[in-house]
Length: 89
Length: 452
Image 1 (cartoon, rainbow over the protein chains, first blue to last red):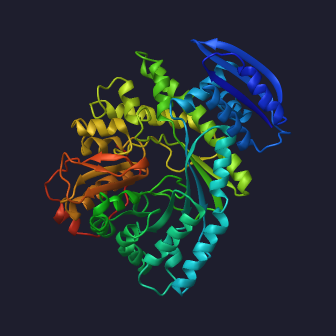
Image 2 (cartoon, rainbow over the protein chains, first blue to last red; image 1 turned 180 degrees about the vertical axis):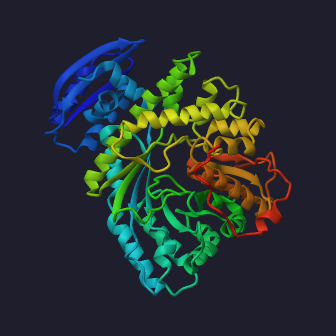
Image 3 (tube, each protein chain N blue to C red; image 1 turned 30 degrees about the vertical axis):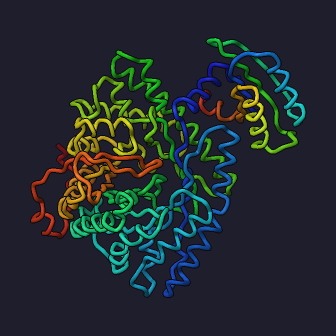
């Protein structure tokens, strides 16, 4: 199951590292990663494959948002299909 | 591959523009739950709802978590109870409403619709019993919603039922007076009611529907509003095009959620309802969209034209995004549930008469309008008759959900809370329609040639 992890917030040291560690712990594979600064806002988008995740999808989402709260960032994970539905015919 | 801009646009729609799926509604047939003994019948109803909808809420929550789209309500619609209860010997139908309420609470849904009767041509014994029980049923339950269909384009309007419903609305207001006459917010009087509507309070599972199905209602006035900001000053065909594109995106999300819910629950997908349903939250208002088109306030001359454009463009955009479109499908204009409508009504810019005109070009009718508590049953019946006439002649669904708030007068506010919002008491024309209403009988079905 492919999903996008999006991270939005104030830039600081170690954001990508922290997220990658969390994903690796849950056995989630990172397929693609892009990062930019939009209007002073750190924005990272990661395409991941969560098919072999060791935890259910909703628990994975909860761990990511918990990490986001700690780092004062908004981190979410959403299945790829919602973006395809909205933007592709 | 989806690009970064598209991903962020989706997130912005959900986060800042209130994009959500308003409801996943499971329609359940209760036609096999009739029994001469009311207790047996109620048990069968309770068991069947718990059996069919046991996983509905959990499944909805899972879909929310996986796709990151809020699903605001999970609901159930059932076969009109007058049909299920008809073979029962009891005269008091309130136990049916209580059984429905218990089942709804057990499975954890937000609302359950279908405490309903279809009486557009006349009432059976069961229909009359059900209608008589509505005030008490709504006062003694929390989640049950009721609707009565009093007219159709093919049958005309049953004015005896209209008169009766005027009284029922009053009694419901009286029995729930301690809660701002909240019972009336759970009662809809229809003309041309649809069988697969996922929205409350008018949802029921029609007799042409399968054993069980999933219908989805989308929302998204905030998204349309934001899109229109980018088209400021452009001609109206650009406005229509912008709305169409936005409606397409919103509806595709609805379709995705509907398909997921249907496959996970093992229940056929029914329809996506393309209605733009507002909420009382700031920035989630249909009135804002109309004002963004260039009206200084909703209710101004031009409101009906702007709404006609909006309603049509939403349908045109949505229809291509879903394999099956149905339900009410149009823009809703519930006064209490829309911050812009509340503001316009408070300021005196929006009258009941203008709202009535607006219902000629959109779904669904005079919705969530609070009027003075001393409004007579005949006047309420006449308001219902006017709205039913618009539906009957124009071959569309219309409805009245009106709240004669006991003890309140023009200028007061009545609070319902949650999605139902709050409403200013709006003035009603005080000339009496009593003699007209008391005539009863039927208004014959209209001509459908010589159309002018």
